Length: 335
Image (cartoon, rainbow, N blue to C red; front, side):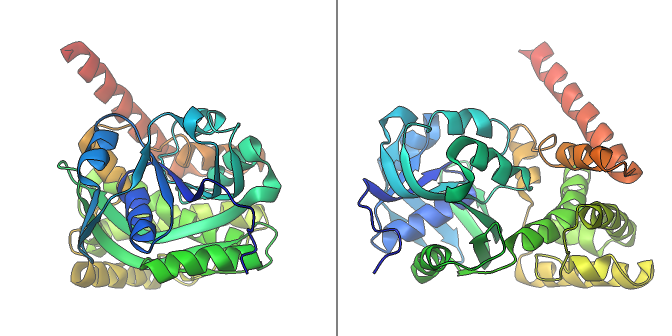
């Protein structure tokens, strides 16, 4: 028997029909679950016209219900937030009227849980970590590039029937997922390495494996990770190796040994996902806003509250902020 027994209009509502939202929504729909994709503009038009088409690790097309106006959505058992973090608070405010059994976000950075809790209430929120990747192509199809795991868990560190139920439905649909106990630790373990990967992806504009195997950028990634690791430690959050990169190992031992770990990971990416591009690079190439202030900016705010200096993270934050302002000014001047 389901532990989310109340009958609602949909089993799953997915806010955001980009790469990861489309991958999860398409798999759930193909598996027979009722899914509503909250989308707008050209993306909504494409899904209406041709369904959602996946390429890469799996290839199929499936029709999915599109909801263009959030005010129309009345209820869903599970809300999955898969938008970019800029504008999340506004997007969630348009769903305050809706009845959701629970919600989780697969966005980058711990701020996602705070935004969800503010909008919907802490008791309905699961933590989540996605080591799953894809790329939305210009023609509307989605390239599915990595299917490692989506982890779900209670924010208080316990494992629950509802987290297990949702993870089992996603996993059985074809997107690997499981429920875990230490989700906050795992979210931060990904975040401390993601900050460096974000920074290097944006500045090198390279597929992932190339800046992981390069000795200079590998050193920078290690140093950025160690600054972030000190922030997590100051917040009392344990960092583990159970994320996309082994964060705990990168934060201890010699710098040389940590660099070798990064370069080894790069060689694995080169073999298994040679075309993988971090979502930040996809956003940059598509002219979309970067998740800069909600990730690096959020980390710097937390560090300032702890009285902790993070000079390298701050340097990257300032350089990328300046580049974004220049990009916007150039675009405005040419319009």
